[in-house]
Image (tube, rainbow, N blue to C red; front, side, top):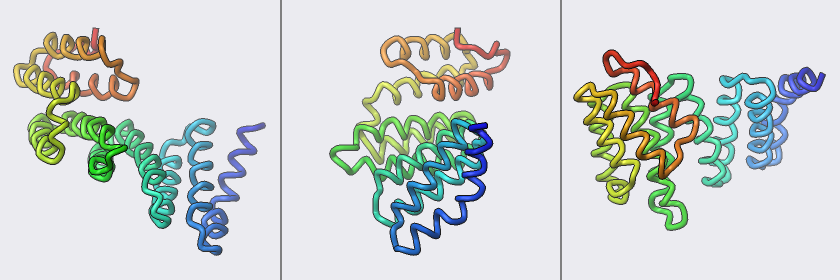
Length: 205
């Protein structure tokens, strides 16, 4: 089957792909091989742990060529999957790292607020106080974050969480979603936060 062939590609090519690229001093070639393998694990074999490992390897090789944009693209995949697997400290570290590297770039700085927002959601799942301190830190690092709809939503959610008010939490999310559609990842993280409110039903309806 196609899947078994792809599995064979992954297991047989993995050791060589790094060697082939590096033997010629071409980190980019090695990075692209690891990205291809990561995508196979991600979409065909659904082995997220292995996909993460290859995206990390690809990011390292891209950094070796100073291809920071490509490295960040791989790291964001790692951050997203790490959060899904409840590896929040790892996800936070990645989102903060990528946000910091993009906020000084005139072409990319608009994206920094999204990465700070995702890092803050991960903090929030772990601990409410952590989230509060993180948001203050991000506002200090990147003042534009303060004016973002994401930051305003986070503050409303913190208030609702402090009051253990699941209705206010849901209303704030619905209001945000009516203007800026939340994706599957964001919805999952928000549901995990909401479940930490006492007596919550565990949905956003």
